[in-house]
Length: 425
Image (cartoon, rainbow, N blue to C red; front, side, top):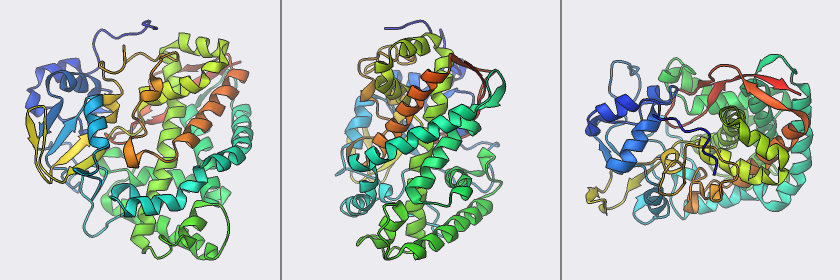
């Protein structure tokens, strides 16, 4: 296994190991752009794998109009996360998949935050769009668009990979899935960013602005909904508008499921596309390895998704008292399953901080979740990334990252906002 890059200390090491264990809170979004969460997770996995945070992110840096997160448990080891993610009898996805509870005056119900049977019923309505026959039909179009975007990037000149490639390819795919007006496709990624943003992110200035933009989203989509009632198209809006179990959704549930589908189709693919470049910059020998052997592309994609973990965690709520590691998770307690930590668990992945395109168990990553809530678009995300890698390797000798990328201020969406690069042919 490649061991060419192994930092002697993870970012934030001194803070993580000098702070009292009880005071460590990986949900603080301000530590994520600086990558200071890695050392916290390392310490928690080794010293306190079921960690109680009694008061999440309460500081002077917290915006006044942010709802408090409250107390929660952090689960940081791979096997423990798997155990909770597959235990649907004792852990619920309701009322939310993120740590803050939904606002009572602005609920956004979505099937990922529902339990059986309603979850399964609504999920089945839209699942055909990413079934194997649909993927086969979309593959050629994905390749054509990828070729177009990559052929359009400047060579030997600096540009932003996130905006020029990752966002552009992702919005094209989202527009196809929704049969959304192509000229307005950038609205989709804006709404995705707004949906997962708080005032601390800089994406919106206030909760009021966030809600206003999401209402713009639902108004736009309601127009498309009404146009497609009775239609026979194979897009997500037509499926929702005509499905037996979704056609009677009210506006908030429609918006909630739209947000789920937009975010799900945006964040994993977009941030893994950017991570492909940043990871190859940190581990240049891996680029050389896959360039010499294209058969490694599927495993390369799996390893990128493990190493990046585009959505850092999912929340569950305990339905009864549960014993774990000599502690009791009480009924009603919030639990954060930190996928990002499980994917770096030394007990599961050897040298987990190293990007290794030949890693034998790369496909065992938990970035897509597990159990009934496993991301149903995972194969589409993998297909897009595999095509991107194939087309990049045909064209480019190297993609060099210039400086450090800018990252999301978020403990939920683990991604990049800007990454300057130079493509060498």
